[in-house]
Length: 171
Image (cartoon, rainbow, N blue to C red):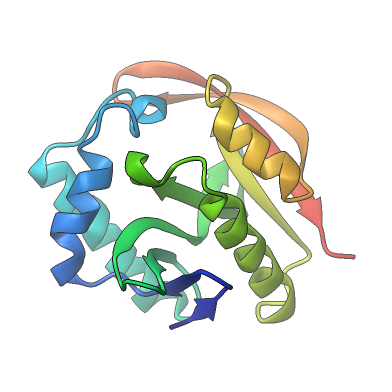
């Protein structure tokens, strides 16, 4: 495990996580902020991108979110470098299986990622890039001490999607 909270473990994704990852990325309700669910090829490309990030960045990436009690992968959360306008920002991202929504897992994992970014990576700031219609994720960002700092319309999967940049600086 890379990180551990009271109820969750965060570890690198592996090819063997494809089925669990599919339950997340192929659920239309979970993926509404991405303009719909992924198919198998898009899911594999997503997984491959995470594995490439581990090779590129080493100490961070988007990790499997695992219930410590059962070992079940219920989502993903972690740190990635994301393009925001003309620069890159260190982002906390999170996606959970719908069956595990509203249990505090997203904020528990996001807080652990924020602490890791500041302590282990010595990051001066960390952000979350959230679609303007994704109110639950915006609430997680706010609870994680982030404030909205900018907006931008990103073009993704053939659609213009307004996004909000939430950030927090290291104390």
